Image (cartoon, rainbow, N blue to C red; front, side, top):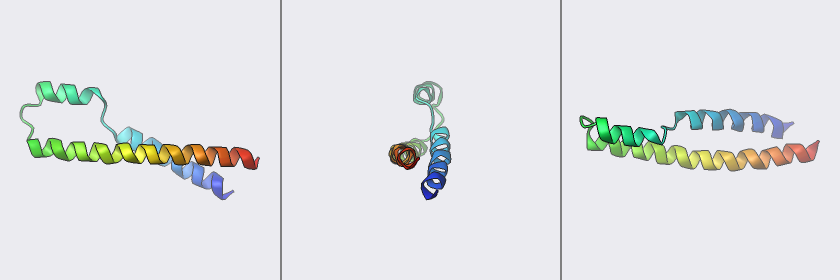
Length: 74
C-alpha cells in the first residue's frame, strides 16, 4: 500500500519535472533571436536545467524501482 502511494507521488513529480524543462530547440532559437538576454540570465537558466535534469534521472530510477516493487507485491 505504501509503495503504491509513493509510486503515485513519484509519478506526479516526474511529470512535473519533465514539463518544467525547456525544450532542446529552445537553446538554438535563443541563440539566434535572443541577443537582448544577459549572460547572467543564461547561466542561471542552464543551472536550473541541470538541476531539473538530475531530478529527472533520480525520479525515473525511483519510478522504475517502485513499479517493480508494486508488481512484485501483487
